[in-house]
Length: 105
Image (cartoon, rainbow, N blue to C red; front, side, top):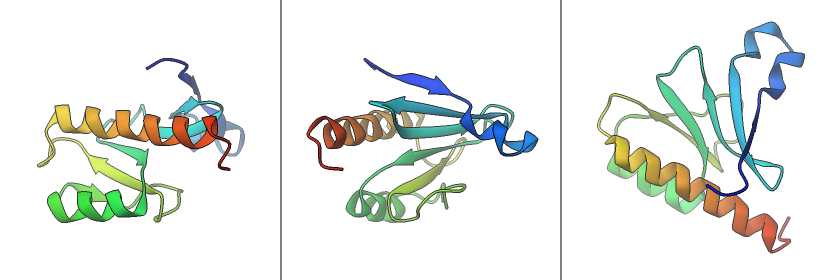
């Protein structure tokens, strides 16, 4: 995905957050993963899409340290195929890129 950067910004707050890897587009988060616990990913979404995802899959959780309205946790090794997880991550990228490229913040 073009223009993506990654950082581990939360380690400065507490050592236990050093493994939290955040992916950014236009300096805004769209995907968060714990590289020491590769069992889920947190992605940005829209409230409508989060509702659809929750209705379609059971391998869903509440995002770690993020807004329930705009973030969702996708658990790996559940009922969401890897290809679908990749699509959700790409959609998160598109949502953030479009929002901030158009100056809607």
